Image 1 (cartoon, rainbow, N blue to C red):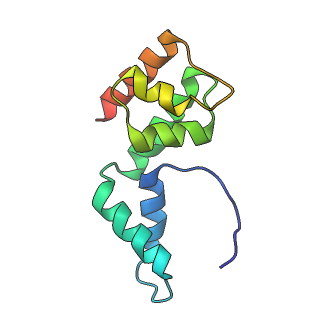
Image 2: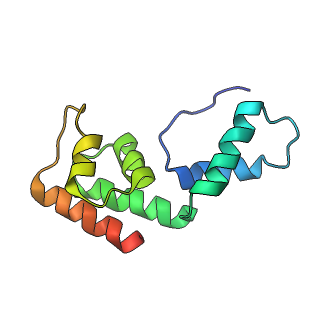
Image 3: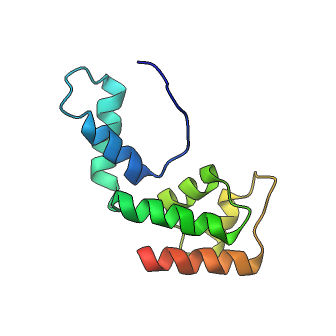
Length: 108
C-alpha cells in the first residue's frame, strides 16, 4: 500500500474512508482491527466532524492535528483540553477554551 497524502483527520472521517475499503478482501489484519474499532466507537457523521474541525480551528492557534484530537476525545472540561495541549508549544487562553467547549457541546 502506498501513502499518497498524510493529514490529520477526525475518527469519523477515517471510518468513512475505511468503510469504502471494507468490501475489499485485501485488508490487512491491522486495518480490520481499526475498522472494527471505528465502527464500534465513533458515533459522529463525517459532515459534522468536518464542520466541527473547521469551527474549532477558527477559534485560533489550533492546528489540524490538535483539532482532530479534540474531536476524537470530545473533552467536557477545560482540564481535558489542557491535557491535549500539555506537550504543545501553543496553549489556549481561558476564553478560547470556553469557546471550544461551547462548540463541542453543540455537537454532543
